[in-house]
Each structure stands twice: as C-alpha cells, then as structure tokens.
Image 1 (tube, rainbow, N blue to C red):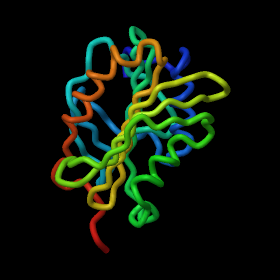
Image 2: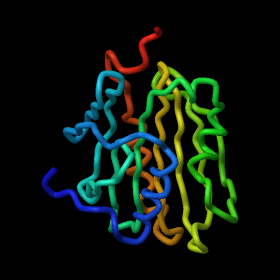
Image 3: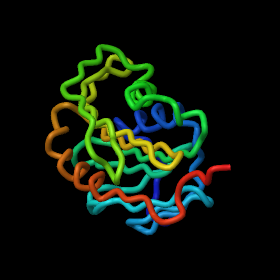
Length: 181
C-alpha cells in the first residue's frame, strides 16, 4: 500500500511485540474505514486521524503510528475456536506479556457492538521503558478483537481521545464471524 512504512520509531516496537503474541497474519485489505480478511473477518472502524500513518506489521490486522503523540495503534482480529472460552481479562493479559511494573488505572466491562468488551487503561514497562496503554478486547461470533493504543506517558492523554473515537466506531459487518460447523 502506498504511503505505508515499516514500524521502526520509538513505541512502534510495542506493536511488533504485541502482534507477536496474537497469532494472526496481515492478509487483509483496508479502505480507510472497512477492514476485510478472508471469509470470516469484516469490520468497520471509526475515523482514522490524518496524523496516524499506517505501518506494516507481521501478524496484525491494522497498525498505525501517531508520531505527533509518540504513540502506536494496533487492531487485531482473529477467529479461532481456542479463544471462545477464554475470559476477556485473560485475553487482555496475553497482550501485555513481557511487560513489568504493570499498574491498572481502570478496568471495566462495557457494551461493545452488541456484546461486551473489557476496557483497560494501564501503565507498564517494556525493557525498562514506561508506556501508557488503552486496551479494548471483545469477542463476537467466534472472533476476538484487540485494540491497543500505546504511547509515552508524557503525550498519551493528547492522543487517546482520537483512539477512543476510532474504537467506538467499530462494527462487525454482515457475514463476519465463525460459521458454526
């Protein structure tokens, strides 16, 4: 895709670390609001700010770099039977494996596209580097959706409102999800 770059700036390494634990492959298409991957994954997201630049990562559905706010954004969708019985808190914890000094500021279950999502804000360190995170994890129709905004604690608040708007625009599209077999 023209204009894409490899994730390489500070904080973008976190996307790579998070994606490594997710297990999906970047195979889908994105038109600026709708993402499609194979037969099972199709969803819409909210407004993508012009300051967010799409980056390529292995294994994630969508990733962006918000250089202005020194932050990275990851969206990952996967449809696997193994996640069906896994609680949202366990799926959230999988995203922060490898971090240290975790401090959860807020963790609440919220309505999300006709289901529930676990919304977690926290601070943690990766290799001694402090990061602030805003994480949403949801399951719907046999699929799990992860949304992660990670950035420098100093500029985190200035970019988090745009991330919230982006996440709250999420909707699965007709035909997405695992067809019961």
